[in-house]
Image: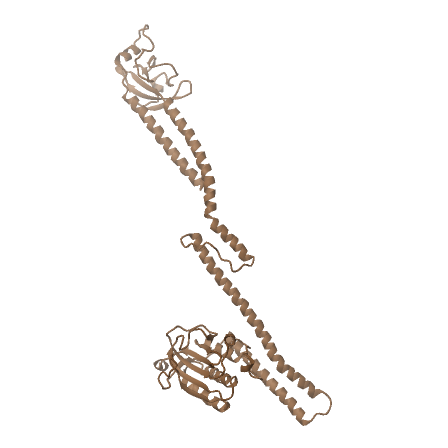
Length: 493
């Protein structure tokens, strides 16, 4: 800023100096061009009479000087004008004269101090006349201008240095505040944000972008910490789940190896406990392997799946294996809880029928296992639009491990609803977590690793849908399978 300001002021001063000097010289040139010495004074000045004075008093106005060269080109000793100060330095002959007639030029004074402006003109009888004016006024004015310009330049540069530094510091205050905030964030205060976010300034826009970046970084760090916490809990829970059957196997194996007589009943009981524990551990390992496969490289078939037929098969299987709970199949209810059409709708989607069958059977098994005997279980199938009441989107009291679907989108739905005691919100918020078990009133006394719903939610998310739960204490549980609807026309190409 200082360099640019100095260059600008210096350029303006040079231009002003040149214009002023040129204007002053033009005025002198106009005076020289318009000067006409009186003819009588010229005759008296060039006469050879010795009794004539060297300078006729009052012959010329102001500071004019007039010098003469005779027809032979020699400088005459007499001149017109005041001789109070040294005149211009002129050669003795016209042959050495470098002046051009009618073109004023500047020449040095005879004593080397000061300058004169001279103009060559033609005189009478072949003579040459040189009219001169001193440039003392011009030199004095330009000298004062130069000193004034030098002082002004110094003051301007100093002011620009001081004021410019202050202005730049003031303009960079937002960056300074950003620097301090960044240092505090680096020190561990991750909740801090940059204070300057005015969208009308470059620094403000930078602050907005950096704040957005910091929000994403903090979210990523939080998610990473939560993921690490879930992983630690997962490993601890898996170890805990495996420890129980392993301890049982180890204990009964040591019992069988212990010397001493044992009855056949004791031997059968030990073998049965070892086999049951091994089966339980094998099931847990298979579930863990399935979860790892679904998380890493899920592989699903892409077929048209009739959810009504799938639900009917699952209901028939549940009716055979769980005679303590009445299970029925019906149409999906509308938002107000009434039967939407009274008939079962054809609900289709695209996906893996075996995995989807696994999800529905898991939900039916949970409903029959975690509710008292005789509790009715209802399976409802239908097609609806995604919404807060029909399913597929979030709402208070609803839990899901997957993101919501676009509201208003056509979806195929399977609901598994029981009339059991329901779940409190604190437990419902964690039912889809791995190895999570609700309160003892809804837990199995034996078996059940807490991976079933986590596997089901993962399968649903892999199909572009989601598994959700609506529940409240005393209101039962409604597990809802929500999948993108496939119209019948699309299923036949």
